[in-house]
Amino acid sequence: MSDLTSPAQQSRLRRLALAAQGLLQAQAYGSGLAGARNAIKHLGYVQIDTISVVERAHHHVLYSRVPKFTPAMTNQLLLNRDIFEYWSHAAAFLPIDDFRFSLPYKHAIKNGQIHWYKTPDKKLMAELLLRIRNEGPLRSRDIASDTINREGWWDWKPAKKALEQLYMEGELMVSSREGFQKVYDLTERVLPSHVNSSMPSVEEFAAHLVDQQLRCHGLVSLKGFTYLRRDTTLRNAVKNRVQEGLAQGLFEEVQIGSGDVFLAKAGTLDGQLPRLSNRLQILSPFDNSVIQRDRLSALFNYDYQIECYVPAAKRRYGYFCLPLLYRDKFIGRMDCKAHRKNRHLEIKTLHFESHDFDEDALIAAFITAITRFCQFQDCDTLSLTTVYAKGHNQRWRRALKPLAG
Image (cartoon, rainbow, N blue to C red):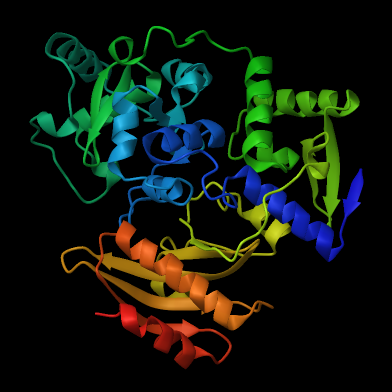
């Protein structure tokens, strides 16, 4: 086991992790539609989220990695059948070539081993399936109902629940999205004929997860390979796969300063890494690089929690704080809101943690990043309410003033 605890070694591990995520390179996956397709294939999934304080997470993740990406491209990838929508550890866009690895979860729901809804309406499901077969794709809002209650997802009308159950069981797929509205169709009409749809063995699934996680993270803990997957059989198969890889010299273990142990492909630690630049990135709370909070803390010494689920009185940084990545360190967070009617981006709070970077270089990098971010949000103006930056508040305000509306 390698023991990498010096500051230089820790920096190299951070760079390895960020390079594996495509966050150091200018265009690791290419640009535009092709770049977005390649990014999802490499990352293994992009999480879909409903929160729209700023541009939604699935678009934000791709924007952070793919030059010339636009939000319309995710639906184009669905229509092109380059990706499909299903559940990973959360709702996600996934590479179409990985379709077969969605089948075990679908099978478990359909057979009652896992409950999506505890008492699915089988009669309504059969009626909806027949309607879609005969009439074509369907949106939940296309169905009339007298039982609508819009107070929360648990009060969705019965037809919506039935559609979701059919989707989770694998009878339906999302053929496209109209805005944020799913369009459902029969799986047999959505899934391209060339895609492998055979049920994987647990060993094949384990091998897939190990390869995927090492590819997109570079360094992975044993727990990280099956992040938020509760299937004990699958977890054991992954553990066996890792042990076999170690015994065969395919993987190597790395212990870092926190005492945590990570695995990497053999030779990864000796490979060439992209050079660091003075680029600052504004990331999504659901970005693939930050979603595993324990890993984030261990590798980057960055304690992050999304606070939209925390009572307002207990929030430290704000409702929807976005992680700030500068060079190879997470150095702060920004709570902001896009006011789309006014085309205005409001930065409510800007927090910078202790760092040893040149302040002028950091401010310049942030100006570049926030200018691009405003464009991504379709905002023309910017305002800043509060900044916490080691007593340099006025410097930040002066620097941002030319962007203010």
